[in-house]
Image (cartoon, rainbow, N blue to C red):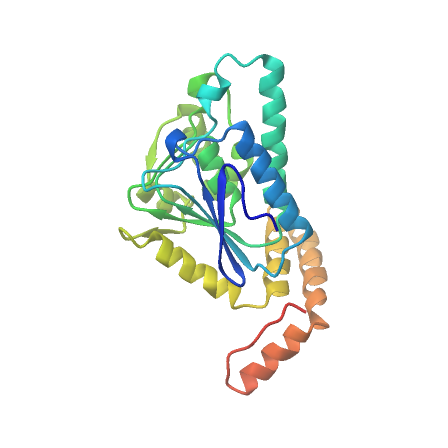
Length: 264
C-alpha cells in the first residue's frame, strides 16, 4: 500500500491499525483537488486490498481544525466546468470511502465544517474533542451539501434536525453533536487520540471477517425493508460459518483465553 501522499499522512500504528491524518495545516486541512485524488486512491486501494488492516482512524493535523471543507481559495474564480470536474472527483472519493470494508473512525480534533463534517458523517462513527465545532455551511455560499451530507446527516440525527442544520448553516457544539447523534463520544482534553485508538484496538482484536460483514449488513439496514435486510444479514452471517476464525473464537471461549484471529 502506498504510504506517502501529498495531502495525507499515513501511519501504521500497529499491524492491523492505520492512522490517516488530513495534512494541510496551513490551509485548515481543506479539501483541495490533490486531496481528492489522494483520498480516492487510498480508499480505492483499501477496497481492493485490506492488507490485514482491521480499523482506520482519520483525524486532522493540528489541534484546532479537523477539516474546513472545500478549499475556497482554490475554488475562487473556477469555471463551471472546472468546478464540476473537481466535484466529480470528490464524489468518487466519497463513494470509495463508503465502499471501504474496513471500519472507519473519525477522531474530530477541531472544527469540521461543510465537507469536513460530511467526511465525519461518512465514517462509521466518530469521537470528538470537547472544543470541536460543526456546521454544514454550503447554503451560505450559494451551494448545498454535495458529499452525501443530505443523505448521511438525516440518518444520524433525523430528518427534522438535519433540515435545521443544513438550511440555517449554523455552527453547533460538540455537546450538541453528541446529543444529536453526530458524535458517539466527547473525549476529555488531550485524550481524543488515546480514547479513539483504544476503541480502534478493540475492533482490531475482533475477527476481521466478522467486523467487515457486520459493517456491510449495518450499512444495508438503512436502505431496505426489515425482511430483506434480515435476509442480507443471514447471507453475511453464513459467510463466517466456514471460517477458521469461528472455530478459534469458540475454542478460545471454552479454553478461557484470548482468541487469536487470523482473518481466514
